[in-house]
Amino acid sequence: MSPTYAPDRTALLRIDDLVVEYPTAGGTIHAVSGVSFDVRRGETLGIVGESGSGKSTLLRAVLRLTPVTGGAVHYGDHELTSLTGEEMRQLRPDLQMIIQDPIASLNPRRTVRELVAEGLRIWPQRVTDTVDEQVRRGLDAVSLDVDLVGDRRPKSFSGGQCQRIAIARALALQPRVLFCDEPVSALDVSVQARILNLIRELRRTLDLTVVFVSHDLGVVKNVSDRVMVLYLGRVCELAPAEQFFAAPAHPYSRLLLSAAPGSGQAPEHEQTGEPPSPLDPPSGCRFRSRCPQAQEICATDVPEPRDIGNNHFVACHFPLLPTVRD
Ligand SMILES: Nc1ncnc2c1ncn2[C@@H]1O[C@H](COP(=O)(O)OP(=O)(O)OP(=O)(O)O)[C@@H](O)[C@H]1O
Image (cartoon, rainbow, N blue to C red):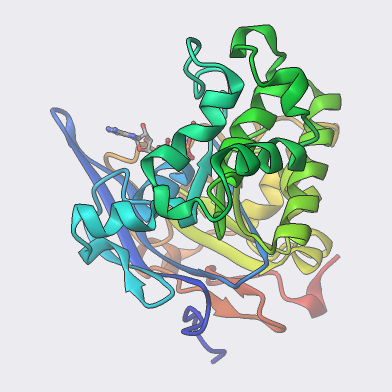
């Protein structure tokens, strides 16, 4: 039998069996249920899945913005879930996050100069030059001129420009990993392309590692070296992007791809119904209730991600192997 997935111990980020559950009045929400992956230095990992699959929870848990129920998050030599609040605070400049709504992420009362400098005031140890110089460089990196925009406030900018300012704020701290949670979903398509190009370019020039979450496969394809597909809090597929898009092997990935905008096919919930509730996820494979290939074993055995060749991992009892692909 082919080997099951194990995160690379030398990777910059290594997530082991992460579990996040939300206790609610109606029961426990199983948002992330034993997710493991790694992110190597300099790469972009795209994480994709439909709404409610646990993408945001996963990012927030990795960054300790949401309490973790179980598992471990290794960043370099640190295990983040066991750090004290102060130890975690010291590491935060390294691990910066960009969120979906750029306008909401910026305090409307501050000028751009103040917004970009804010992190440097909180973490003075990150001032390696002068604050002004790092603010200028952060804005330069996103093609904004501090002399033109520095004294203006967020409301005088478009959504795309606000996202640039949010990225400049992160860059001023000289982070090592940029966590992007749907960073272009709120933007017009033409602006999306420019922000995606910017993220790709920054990764190259600044030696950044990027974790990029989106529900949009087109966007993920545009930026990712590897792709991880989540469904109801579990990993379905983890593969180099080129292989994934050429030959997705999990039935859920195929559904997502066939339902992508522009495919001419109905959205996934119209093809196979709405996903089940995370309050009471299906036994065995969580996708089985919507899977056209499901068999008895899928109800009893949780499929482990297994390598079907070339580091292409699929958590399915009946993956679509290369020899039988259409
Ligand atoms: N703070 C919370 N309390 C209770 N349940 C939550 C909380 N945050 C998220 N959830 C639930 O956890 C599950 C995963 O949500 P999450 O937002 O992580 O998914 P997502 O893939 O990012 O979806 P979306 O793209 O819609 O944000 C969902 O069922 C959601 O309702």
